[in-house]
Image: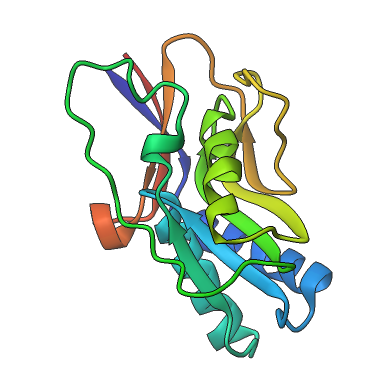
Length: 179
């Protein structure tokens, strides 16, 4: 197994600030905008973006929720191992709000399709956008594209993109892993 660094800690930080600025350009005061991190790995990116927006760009009171899509996936019954669900934490109404789904890697698009179904349990958003740190553009099974992307990666065949967050993995980095 080989591992190549795609993004180091400094580059991840630069991308976080660029994504925050793009969100500010489109949403201004975030009064009607909600960030939703897709469990499990999108929550780290969502929390970081919220922190950057509030502390470094003085954007007040951003609503942040976490969405578990485990049982909304179309492949959840195709595995022998027991599923471990994460916790959904959305303590506000999404009805007529602008929702921004946040995930670390956009791969096949199936997670986002599941998130689109799952969020309907909390109301009908007026608009849904997608923000990802890494867009694996040649691997899509569904016609889903991000509105905001940190980096586009052309990973093929047996290559995997691994995102490490200091909160969970001890470092901020993105790797291309080949088996």
